[in-house]
Image 1 (tube, rainbow, N blue to C red):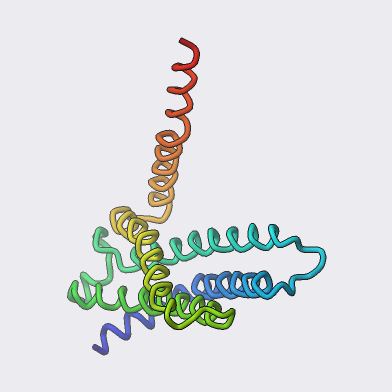
Image 2: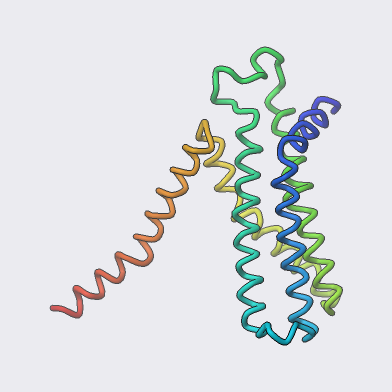
Length: 189
């Protein structure tokens, strides 16, 4: 257990700027949501602008938390021949437990609790609270699990970024370009 906590502490010391950025984004989004929900937004901000800003902050939060998660996975890489665990053996279950402890507590549970506190503070009933907490955690899991898998398959962050750009380009092509080309071809005949 000491080794697991030691690795998690090392990861926190290495990744605290990214974690702080995640918390800053989620707290700013919570503040904007509270302003919009209570109708006390500044006069110069339209309610639609608050919605756009909160969606932008949610997207930025996903990007920053994905970067932190990939850096967490790649910090003690199992695919490198120069990994420190070859000279100081760490069992794979202990390494996995430390990474899950870090990601689960700092990147999933704490932001979910911030979101739940914001929702409760703005009048969410306790009856709906468990449903919202479940969907918040499920959303985080479904968005970041593929990032962790890609991060574990690549040796460096640059290779991960290239895989991500290639994946996004193929997704964009599959969902936007190909249907439009097929529709144009169908209408031109």
